Length: 178
Image (cartoon, rainbow, N blue to C red; front, top):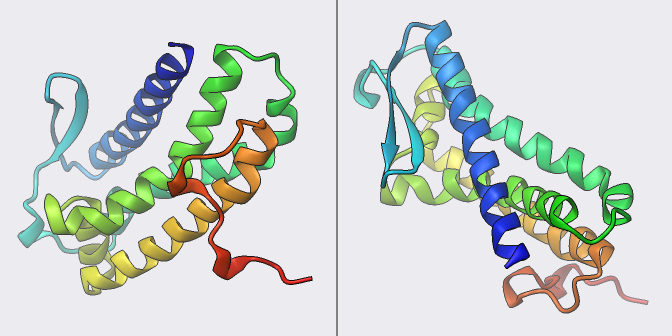
């Protein structure tokens, strides 16, 4: 039960930070139209300008900064994994483990998959940078693979969680040969 509570708190924290930064940046540029709840619990920022009409580099900042911030938080927490992993087994330690994992993979996954399913931040980043959305997806895929490999090789071993789920086992292609 503790794991699920920690996991759900970490997801809620990462989503809140991500969407709060969207809201703050959109408000600074006068683009914040609404913040609504998706499925009754997940916040979603609604912008004043439709994706098809978005122009200007500020859209790359509004759409991309939350992803950069959460990934940077993930890398920061990964750098602190030693002291964090020595915390007593409990909610705080478990929460920080899951927050690190989620921050390293959530936004790159969102940027990579989002355009296929629901649009999302990748389209805003592409519009702001004046590039094709596929370039944003490609960069996100590389970041996702790097984050996943760091989780497999650097996060799970420090927390001594036992054998990680198959999705977070190190890829053999990156295995060092003796």
